[in-house]
Image 1 (cartoon, rainbow, N blue to C red):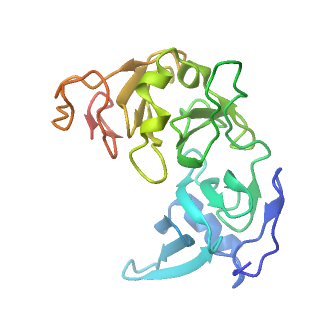
Image 2 (image 1 turned 180 degrees about the vertical axis):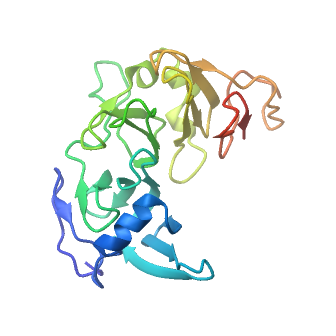
Length: 264
């Protein structure tokens, strides 16, 4: 490999990704975890980069790239402990998967069971995860829970800090899934992803999920069932400019102080 690491097999193997040394010393990792100095994590098609601001807050120090040559779709620091990092990555030999670090990027471990759709039964279209596109820490009261959005537009949940992932059947096996997310109509070369998974800080049961082919959806039972939430979001490119689904938002965010306010 270009970064000097040996190819790894899937199934929870570890990876030391940065040939020039660890991104941060143990002391620096503690400082970053405490929030003493800002750090910016940047995922790219050429790996992941760490930008650390100096104590004067006038310049940035670049570390990386880690996972050189691999596509990093999303990398997220867990705000619940400020030390754990999950990374959604597509590697040349492992395919779409999730890596996890518990020491702020000094070392990484691949998920033992990455997100994957269940096996199709007779008459169903076979689905396979092409990309793990988005990662979201769970509610503050569920410290080991994470959610992942994929392409095709799947939703997955981990209850062990990203080590193993289960399908959220309320979305992936919903009676309307093939209508909301027609796989034959993927509008982008990499398919249509699920992204911007939002958790109401007041209620872990209340969630939003957004896809690039169907729009915004809401669940009030932690993903057990979903309803479209798109009325009023005009889609002039469709025959019906105000459809219940079919919109193409690119990003949806929740106001940090007013959870009922969403921006898209």
